[in-house]
Amino acid sequence: MTFIPQATIDHRALRHNLQKVRETAPESRIWAVIKANAYGHGMERVAATLQAADGFAVARIEEAQRLRHAGVTKPILILEGVFTAGDVESASENGFQLTVHHLQQVGLLETTPINFPVECWLKVDTGMHRLGFAPSQLSEAALRLQKVNGVGDLHLMTHLANADDRNDPASLKQCERFDRLTLSSYTDLSIANSAGLLAFEETHRDWVRPGIMLYGVTPFQHSIGSDDGLQPVMTFSSRVLTLNHCNAGDRVGYGGTFECLESMPVAVIGVGYGDGYPRHAKPGTPVLIRNQRLPLIGRVSMDMICVDARALPDLQIGEEVVLWGEGLPVELIAQSSETIAYELLCGITGRVDFIDVEKD
Ligand SMILES: *Cc1c(COP(=O)(O)O)cnc(C)c1O
Image (cartoon, rainbow, N blue to C red; front, top):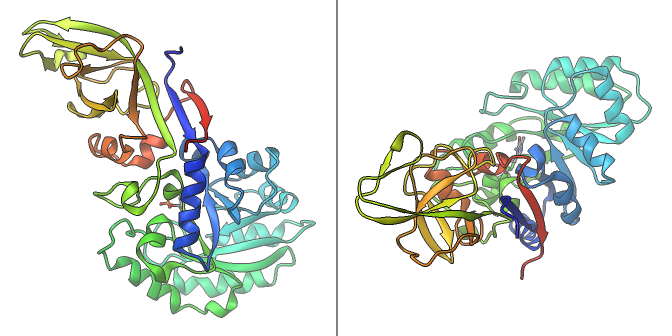
């Protein structure tokens, strides 16, 4: 038995969630978004399992290079594009598709001689005001790229800012701005992230770009993945390190922020912010032991947390504790830590052991 915290990755759930994308947007091809180490799940293992995706999208060229190095032959889209001539050469040699969101990137493509043409996705800013050309600048960028020998097919994409709220009209406004552009200049179009895909059918274009939903997690506020038929891929767990019997008036953990009001068992669990458990988890945040939810007490330390074990008086050292995943949605832990599930998943650190399973 190991006391090292574990991230158990359920590959069957991963395929199930991809299938859910297929059913939701049956006319679209799928860029499976596996940036940031596949949202903390491990990019190479996720790519190997998502054979049914049409391609993989990552943020940075280094991630794309890692994928090719791992033997991935599918199309790879780099969502932030290139920043140096060397990047352009690497994209050409490796067959990466590039997001182009700035005239500086257009300049790099114009001036870097390459052997194999590179497909480019012009990114237009329809309201997020992060990456992308203003609609008024777009045709200049498109005209310049069309003249570059090294540029192959030219596509168009945009990104939604508010799709996590099904009732926010901003997403449809973004779609309308997109549809007012000269779409016929482009081979393929793409708008949807997970939230757009699930909430707004008008965002399903030639390609959809789901990330978070592949991991079984909802993109929507006040919701969990199973509400949309998704299954959690990562179960983060550890074990009971020790059990203390505290007396009324005893204080638990750094700062003594929790005071026992009666004599009670306190379980110390071998996981902390050094593993990726959120330090800001509020008192009362549940952990799951024997399918029962026990509340966090006191502050989260680097290697340990403490929970109120009154509900399980016969608890033993070494018993398994689920921090999130199967039976305990990561969305709940995120809410209780004033963050989003994306951050928790990405935050799993290098000292956690990964276990690959196929659950049924
Ligand atoms: C991260 C990202 C996505 C995926 O977003 P999810 O909310 O995880 O589905 C899609 N498109 C772009 C441009 C992104 O940066």
